[in-house]
Length: 140
Image (cartoon, rainbow, N blue to C red; front, side, top):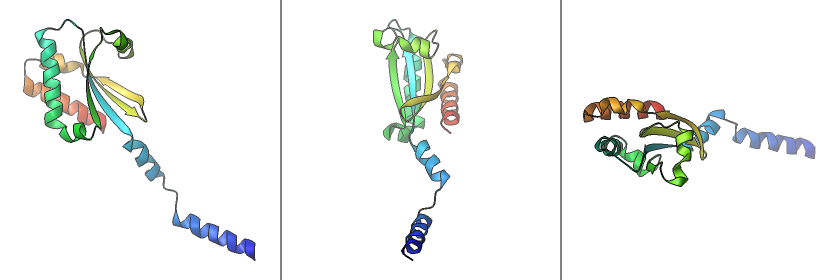
């Protein structure tokens, strides 16, 4: 009789806490973070500085909440610094670049080079729309 009561109580308790795969999936997704990197060299031209300024301005204008809650981070990295040289191989950098990276639980899951920034260098609105659309698509 006692075993039947223990089994019944166990089943009741398990029934109160059903396994829900979507809850586990949501917890994993909540741990996703994104970093927008601007990589440059020590010697910088006007265009390189403009890309950095445009990029940060777009993030501030289009993703202020993400910057505030740190779900999107902005990092400017000089790849000529010894501790940053690995990024050249990591992202196959050939020149200055704007990269968006997704990290899950602290590990990079995927990344994308927003290489068309150079095509829109002389038109802030086109630059802004390109960058905004690429980031929105990436973080979905």
